Length: 119
Image 1: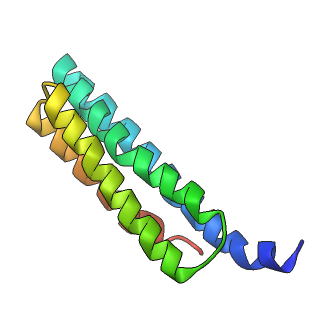
Image 2: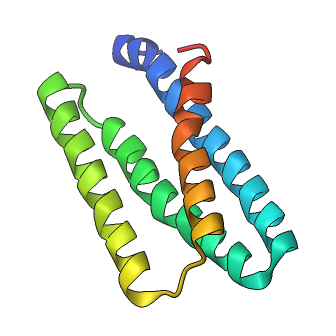
């Protein structure tokens, strides 16, 4: 294994762990809210997609070079992408607030669980 791969492997492992937790928590939220109703479930699905896609893109961008300045810029891009996704969700879809905001909050807070993993 090359030196760069050895140094960056824990970072990739932690990113994958975070995305795994987000996928698991998002899937559980969507299933739960579909039990409450179709509109709640679709709103939960929309929230999970709107939050997860920027995080997947952020994780893929981090797999490139490791420059702290660029990492901060990438984080701002992720936040801007998240805000655009939320704006699209509010503008074009009729969302149910409970399913949408509860799922969005839980998926966003899954970072706290993922950050406790090895890395």
